[in-house]
Length: 257
Ligand SMILES: [Zn+2]
Image 1 (tube, rainbow, N blue to C red):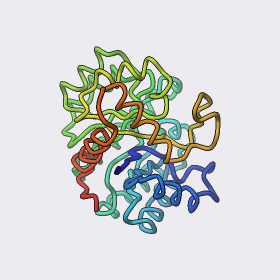
Image 2 (tube, rainbow, N blue to C red):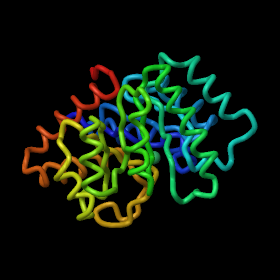
Image 3 (cartoon, rainbow, N blue to C red):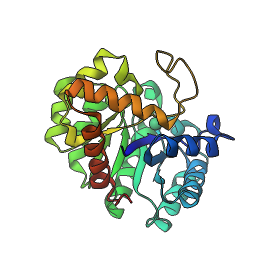
Image 4 (cartoon, helix red, strand yellow):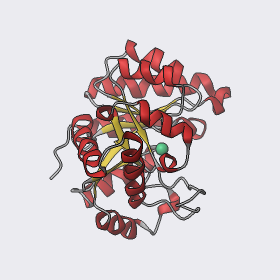
């Protein structure tokens, strides 16, 4: 079974010192692709290095996360854009980018950074990976004014009517470990066409419920997610994994070996 973790943060401080172990765990679990999402200039650089080191497994999505907007250093936005432009052949997506209602006080700055990231994706013809906590409706409404190749709404957790709007636009979504225990997430998985779905861990986010029990999130958790999706969709896990691997190739324009 070929498994995909389409959204993880390998450069996060919580994973420091554990990368070799994580990569070994991923390979042993049948993971064939890890999309590492950056948060700022520093993690963009580090994610590029990891993608080079584990070239057959790790794919970089580079960008500035809305949570990092408030701590952006002078010229960091410009430097990040410059780095991504220079490394455009290595970059597989612009992510993680978006808007977060929790930082509403920085709304204007969040909008400026998000707009610049979307314009960059347009100009480099790259897909985007979007964080939309509390802002999914707004984002689904604003994205059609950009000319974007492909859009992924990560950890989709909004209404089913918004999910349908996103599907009408041809967007993809990801879901992760909560697929095993959250009825809300399970309902979204039931409704989403499998052709527009990818699996993620969003590691190092910690999942306290069973069967994860608060342990450090590992790519091998994807196996539980695929099993849960197969149960919800009343399909064989092998067939679910096969479709997700195909979706990965389509979304990121990558050929899996
Ligand atoms: Zn994330």
